[in-house]
Length: 149
Image (cartoon, rainbow, N blue to C red; front, side, top):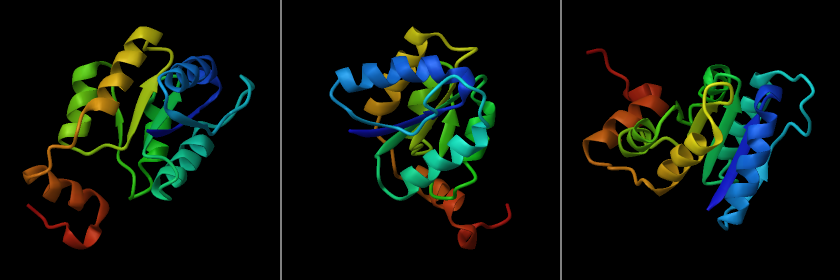
């Protein structure tokens, strides 16, 4: 699978560990930065990751920052991308099954390496359930079909 990964400075070390692990598993990893732990702005890397995924250059994405919150907000600004902030494998699974999430976000200050790996492994292996969930996912990306309740 082609996987893009991006972070801010707070998650630089976690990004490096996860990139190497994903490559060892045989995935094609696109590291979108940053290249050091020097201070950067998470929106820049969230937008870069979202554009990369929306363009079809990778199948899935991993977004990392200190809490995972800021970068997930940035990634979700792109209507072609559905980024889910998760902290354990069940939410990673549900983000795929129900929301067809194509990016997972994790907080480096909140999630250890083993839990991050477990979340990503679940995220990558869980299929989208489709069916009634497809109509809901369509509403996330297409404002024309949004209807008031």
